Length: 183
Length: 162
Length: 148
Image (cartoon, rainbow over all chains, first blue to last red; front, side, top):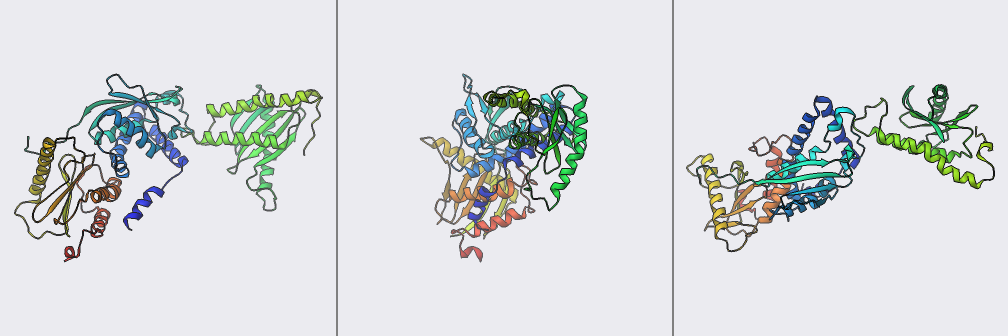
């Protein structure tokens, strides 16, 4: 296979949105069955997202060779919303609610493809953070580019809120590890 | 206008909504299952000249006060709509077919909810909304037509389409 | 033009992968020591270059040349470091190193579920090694002399 072929394959291999949505749904439902506590399920989804993010960032950078190191957190937010979300979920969330210090922002998700058919089950299931995987993925991906962030949902349409709002908070910049024996 | 909506898988009622808590709806539904099955069997016969995707089974049978219509999906999920004789003015097959298609689509969406266990009771809020709209909106959309017609709704004679 | 060898380091300075196509002289040190020196060297050069620069660096340290070889360096924002040694007739091959990263490394290592992030790449990653060899040997800078 020549190199150009490899590249074409990346772009033409697509699945329908329904298959993706239903796969994720079946997956969350199964985890919900397997664990007793909803909190534990949320944690697992976050973990899975993290593991995805850690890998996804390399794929993202491979697809977008022009994206380099961001100079500030606003640029990070921009790339995340306009390129990251666009590439992997096909949506472009709007960036709002910047904190005065510029270290925290919200992403408003409009028409999240993951939740298309979803209605949360009654009872403890109402506490389920269905999209938690997205948080984990953002955390994982940004960690790989030396940004430690906290990411969580503050509003969720599945829980009856008007919008789905994801809050990303900058914690600290991770430093490159020093080679052993050097200062 | 529809006064009862029911969804069945085989003989199990997975969804029932009726305008009044009356037992007779259950009787009517159960009575219509046999006719439904009969029609479904005819559908699958190769001699049938119907379109393979045409799931509308038409009027199952009229009883004194009600008319019962049926619809079946290709996965053999049965939908039943019951209309009151007295209010149903000029119920065209085409209109009812559309109602069924909306119901069917709503059913598909609800089944796609990952937390719904197949073949169990449908408790989806969205499905509930669609059913409500079928039961209410129908009245409101046909009422204006009714006002334009000279004959009051109660005295309209219904052409039987058997 | 000749391609000599390739190092891939992760963010923590661990050598994930090493492969040589042509190496005429064997040096008297263990491979482990060599990796450590290479990583330390790259780290020093990088920070030195950063300190010297009068303006903001975009790509940073790209390559250096000696009288007999040229070292090409490419670092991804995720901290993966690709180091490719060639003979000194080779021009800037940053785009090739990016291609190596995006089409070979990402596709056959990062997307391989058996590979857990930042692990050393073992020899059982056959597809990766095969594709890498294919990629390198198809390069215009990879010449007949390599194949002797």
